[in-house]
Image (tube, rainbow, N blue to C red):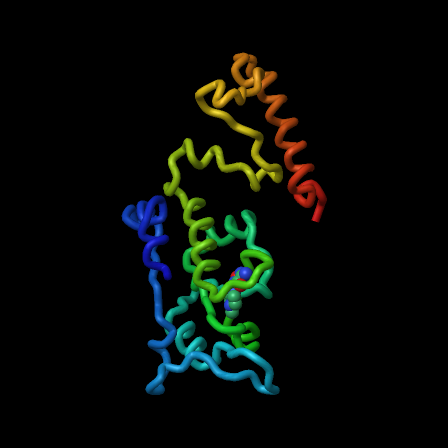
Length: 213
Ligand code: 4HQ
C-alpha cells in the first residue's frame, strides 16, 4: 500500500533531497512459523482477530533506536491534528506501527508504544492509510520541504480558523463574480474582509474550532 503515495510529489522530492528517510518493514519478517502468523484469536472469545504481541515486540525492539518515538495507529488513539504533526516533525525518528484485523493485544499498547494516534472517527481496514496521513502532514513541516511560498500560506489550522474564500481568474466565470472587494485594490479592506470571512466560515462549518478545549 505504501508504494505510490510515498513515491510521488512533495514526499518523493523530500526523500530525494535527503530531508526525509522512509523505511517500510514487513511484520511477517519477525515471525518464525511456516505461515508467518501475525494475528490470533482473542482470549475470552468474540469475533475478529488481534495482532499478536511477539512479532510486534521483536520488530519494534530490533528497529527502534534510543531516540525513537513508537506510535500505534488505531481508532482508540488520541485524535491526530496539526499541533501533533508539529510535535512529531521535531522528532528525529518515528516508528509508525500499523495493524490489520480488529486491533492490538493490549500489552503492545501498554509496554511497546510511546503514543497512539487516530486520524479520525471511522473504521478503516488497516493502519497503512493513517500512517501515510501522518507521514504526509509531518513531512511538509520538515525544514526545507516546502518553498517559502507554500509554507507561509498554510495557516488554516495553525491560527485556529478556517481559510477565507479565495478566487483566481477569470473575474467572472459562468456568470459567477469574484467579490468586488478583492479586485478593488484596497488592501486594508481586503484584509478586513478576509478576517471576517474566515470567522463566519469557521462559525458555520467548524464551530468546535472557536471553543476553548
Ligand atoms: N484502523 N485512525 C483498525 C483505523 C485507524 C483510524 C487502524 C483500523 C488500526 C487495527 N487508525 N486497525 N481511524 O481505523 O488510525
